[in-house]
Image (cartoon, rainbow, N blue to C red; front, side):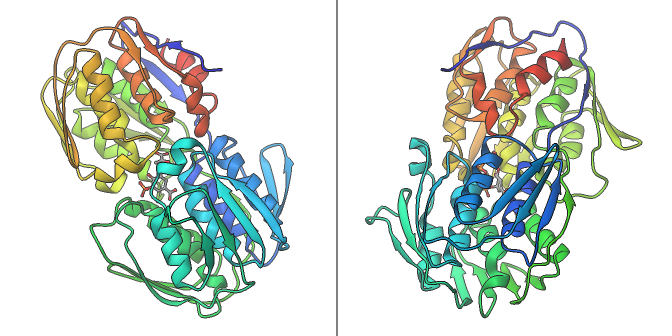
Length: 420
Ligand SMILES: O=C(O)C1=C[C@@H](OP(=O)(O)O)[C@@H](O)[C@H](O)C1
Ligand SMILES: C=C(OP(=O)(O)O)C(=O)O
């Protein structure tokens, strides 16, 4: 059942104080690396949400064990199985990261997901594993569903892929590459690689576990060797900080985000710069980040290629700004949970906004907005964008608020508490 949600309107400056759940990207990397490590690992403060539950279930179906004790998940590495079925849901990290893990085993593993998952780009995952000698039956679709037949080992070596549609194609191979007999000498060839902070996060997490990775422009050399078991604590999800930071920016208010890491690879760390671009101020207060919104929200001109997942909330702010905004470098968002460029243009225009869709971005010109229904297309970040718009627009109804469970099941409750 889907639930429509009346986004809270905010007449006065918001005063937000929020402690966010764990990072999806860090949790799913920690789970994968723990599942192929040389001993059990504990993950403290993991994100418990649809994408991470799907990852946990996938790794368990491949033969890992996960014991939960409060906010700690202890992962015992995979003991290979003969057959498994993996539900990827709509999680890019599951559909791209798990097939290479399955390739290390000797089992037959069937992958499928939500209807939209069958439309998300998967060709590079399938072709790269085939190039590494793994048999995959996809009935010629180059997409989900498909069946992978592991041979018990992957030799690895030199490989060139086109990862211009998603950085996850690179991260997925790097994560398991230390377990290939020859490691991996991976090159990207094609259009520009998006979401570089996510690839940096992959490299950081490998190195923390003793894996040697040499990085040069568009090339990653992962040396073969053990992935050391490691106990880790997951940082708060800074991409999901976006709507709360935006609440301060959109209402000339304030947002305190608890435990903002000093040093991080998370794409969401870019909110510190984005807040300033919109005219806000950013300060540290101990472990927290405090964002103060401007009296007049400025339009922005931004290339979001590196931090594409922040786009929906950025676009919502742009629609509330005083001047025009141009967002570029984000054609790959057409392969995300939904085609985010079309979805944002459609929904903001429906509220009276002026959004022109370009091949690789959006041009947003301020216009008076009115209430109405805002469709979310099974996209958690479309719901976040709608919540931000609803702060300044009467009677905005967000369709299927439950879609936020992908990475933040308590989003609506935390939002209502934070902005009212
Ligand atoms: O590796 C990751 O954890 C992610 C990489 C990015 O994917 P794309 O490069 O496909 O945008 C990002 O948008 C996604 O939310 C998470
Ligand atoms: C693109 C996203 O997710 P996924 O990991 O499913 O690609 C996202 O969370 O914005």
